[in-house]
Image (cartoon, rainbow, N blue to C red):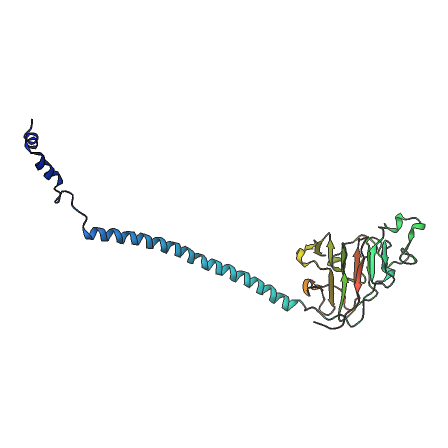
Length: 290
């Protein structure tokens, strides 16, 4: 048995208890500077976390500001573009109401007696495919629809009696389900297949199954929210442009610029529909302005 073992065994119980309970420097207590260091480290970590979170929030603010600035700049650009190149909603034309010219109407159209309404009665094909009896249809009265070379024979379309060679003119139309309206050169093609495009002398707006389009080539779809029930049409011969407006909201829809036609050429309103149930109606001019 070792000396240390025999010495421990020789101690009494009270002496052993006193030895085990004596702490002194055997388990030294924490010093004050160590506690302070730990607290400072914890505070530093917490502060760093808060700074990182705040920095990320601050870092996203410039992006939001830039995004808002870009959006507002785009709106300002569009507004300035509209104000510089698009006329305000004009006064109605002082030249009087626009009425339909039955001598230009396609044979399948039915025109009202006052010349302000039209709808499709039936689709009539070209003259060559009709019998002699089939060349006469009713437009409120009997007339020969294919004897007049001014008549449309491939599209359910009609021109207005009125034509313009100068000035600024305005008229309004109440649409139905399927329509095209606008202005055309009087010399534009009517008696064979053609497209309603500026290249062929037609500048117009169209509506098909609630889809609004500008009659460009190819067509230009317009936002559904722009679809009006009443459309204002303004043609400015000197400026060579035609604009379309929503009468209800008095807002601009679309403008054709740089129209190509010879000086002094007559420009005529045109109207087209394939709606058999509802009339496309020309509205009489109203008095007053903006």
